[in-house]
Image (cartoon, rainbow, N blue to C red; front, side):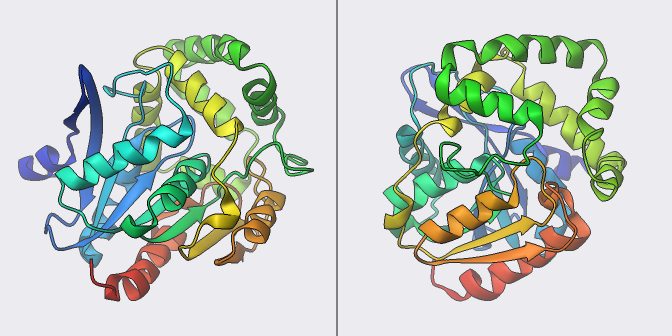
Length: 305
């Protein structure tokens, strides 16, 4: 990687209020006229995970903007923020980057933020892509088949939000003591095909960097993010932008029932189920991710931005 590319992959800071900073990344094409994507990561994670798409996006002429939410990386923690506060922050970033309209991507729990943006600011959204997205966890039967640890955080976040940080302290200590062991534990409940993706050096490095960023300020930012995602979402029935839902058939973190729930409530949504796939669709750079970037260009890329 050249020094120019290292500089391009470094995070940037936007002042979004009095003593509040938003850290964000830009990946892919450096051309300001390239088609923009606003990327919302899953948990635990950070905007850096979108670096996996850097080379593919660069080849395709796509510009990816991936902000770190408050409490992650160097973004200022705000214990009082709500899901409804996020769209105004993203629009402030879009205005600073002179983006009139963008495709909004939500991965896993990032789907809640992508839907919030589509609901509150439809004029700034070309379309929404939900990859392995969660659904509102209070909906009937959507958590059936979910891994036990993920279901625990859904219960804590929705019913006992003041307790969410407690198991995260334990997870943070495990990660800081033995990062590679933490990755192995995380991968132990995944499908063999997903473990093969995580075993790739570039994916493992991105995962490790994202974990470091999400825990840099301690577990409270992550806990608050979990509580937000486990709480009320936008009014899905009133989202007017087209939504494409892509979901793994054997997803054990966001069960397929969540994708069907989203499809049933979003009036302009389509659902594509990837046979045999699990939760790691966004990390499958050579397969699903490249295909989705190409499809974004073939549809949203034709629209004036």
